Length: 324
Image (cartoon, rainbow, N blue to C red):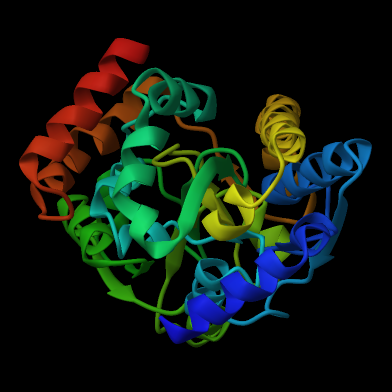
């Protein structure tokens, strides 16, 4: 509390200091070709500049890990962060509905659910006590597929002998439902795990093996389209509330510009991302709707895994159906 009070005093001491520089903590490298979140950050920053604000991109990891970024946001020391959704989920697990498999047909469907269901209002009400505000959910790439070192996967049975990297217990439950096994591995340990055989693969967007230089040992990608890989754009509520009406309008417009830029990029790369993998020597399994549906049906077990209370699962499912 004392740190927050000191930060607030510092911000109130100079209104110009509140808005002069807007630090944006990135989650990926500055690559417009392969990163949806960087497309968002670039468009967001460009719109801020047009409105007379001064955006400053902070390279991935330069301002600390996820917990440290969240602390800086809550004290007003960092203005904007492209963060792991778990940063919000630790306060309000409801947001984990975004990670339920096959909840959304694609990123555009996900955004309709968020907007038509007024879910930003709901989530921000529950996290306001942390002095942060969720302003956008940003797809980092096309929908996730099954990435493996050896096995080519077209059906759940193809995964029977595979050990997959998982984000959490719910993803372990999904792999079990598919007839495979999962183990939680930090992202920084994934390359070594793949090369030593500790894990056989993971779930992510098709650009990820390229972005992180893994195509020497990742050799298969199955276009299962399980979830939309995302980042949460979180801002300091102290900073946002301290802006003038004109500045706040500029930030809101910049958020919309970022959202539009990312969707336009996704529309362009949904197929080219798969071709880019093939150019790197990765075999791509383009699944039929029937093949994909086999994974979808088995994945329903995750909805009862305890990741979310049943009433929250029901809310997400009903909003998803309504927005199709």
